[in-house]
Length: 108
Image 1 (cartoon, helix red, strand yellow):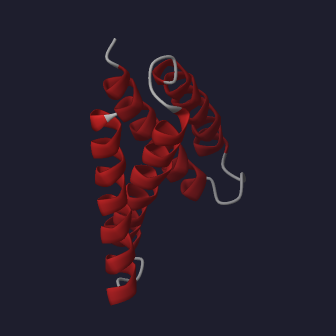
Image 2 (tube, one colour):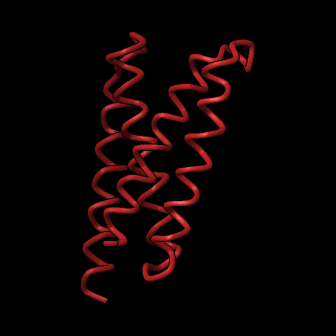
């Protein structure tokens, strides 16, 4: 399977795991707590598969960066978290850095 698709799926599962972590209220709710474990295990398994052919520095940076940006956006829209100019600038920088890493990887 395409390693970039595996990485995208790993990011999606990481996002789900982090949402479950928020909804678990410090591991006090059983179902979301189980979701954390399942989604993170799936995320790491898919990321490990993508690492068979992609560079670890690129994979981890994209996984962490895109996951961070997506969860910040979800936090804003789903949980009413604050939106500031600095937060938006930070998100744009994360996305820009991710694009640069992907571009550098394609040229290597």
